[in-house]
Image (cartoon, rainbow over all chains, first blue to last red; front, top):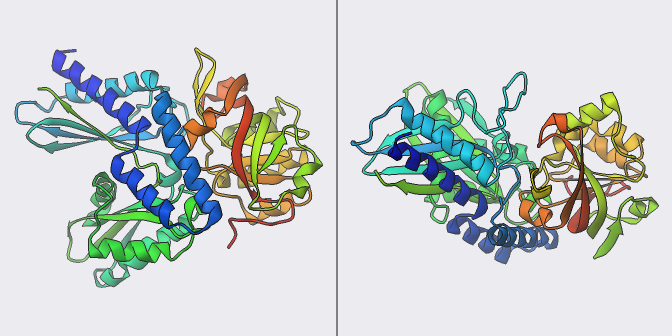
Length: 273
Length: 167
């Protein structure tokens, strides 16, 4: 492998290591804010376990959660780096390296035979999204199944714009205790059936300590559900709602809701070109 | 805080939903595939008084160490749990709670402990790996025999249909 691709593979490995072992500061801060406001005694105990867990993971340099996820990878590519299969091979290699070095749980299986590849790669995974940019930047988003399994997409009617908050809230309500609340909710509005789901996931990449008034409105509605930390009841069910939207067909209104557990992991590394 | 050590007996009947418990002793991990395997090929351990943990850990097999071992979503095991309880299992550990049917199946004999989802490093710090059963199921699905020391859990569903998850 050429040195650029070696550096890229190593950056992917490092970004995964960072994402799996240390929570982004904005997420940890949001958890502390929720804990400070929480009035339910059992829910407070759950936050105390979460904070103890984050300390142990950092000190021992081990994964925060045993569901180390499967990976969504975003690459920004400067003009000087050609888009070739070598780029994809390097990303796959980085995941194989991280599977051994972090270590990660081998999670990737054939969807029908359920045969495990043992290295967290497989046909079509990781999903790799390429975006033009000024530098070669690797972003990894490990996604666990507990929260991913609770995600939904709906093709609303163009006249149903007012129903978006209700739909998002109903998805969180249906998920209940299962996606490890307090959750972060990524919402994709517009685009096509497939791009709405991508928007919902990309929305999870931006910091959660800022919300628009519309995002705050939906977050408030969700927190009235009272599901609380781990579904044991409590004041905070949702730490943040993040929306990404795109244009859509005049006869369509796709809305995708991607649920993210409290362990909202992301890792970003720049690669020297 | 109540302290309990496995194997468990009738002491579980005295627990109430919401009680905080420090759990110690041997436990066994089992997810979807392990439940199916146990129903087909039998228990690789004595189920009487045993505790089943809904968990697929990260294990460093070279060093024989549990690296990360938080709970998985227990609801996936709703339809697979009755045979475990019928065989004498006294407690389940998981996250997210279980169905109304399981709540009934627990009545008068067993409890469901909730441990905080995602807290895999904290859980692993309370664990020593003892053995692996049905390794052919792979790391996430195998039955790992683990010695626990003081895992902080909450009684999510008690043996009298008290259920923190049902509202």
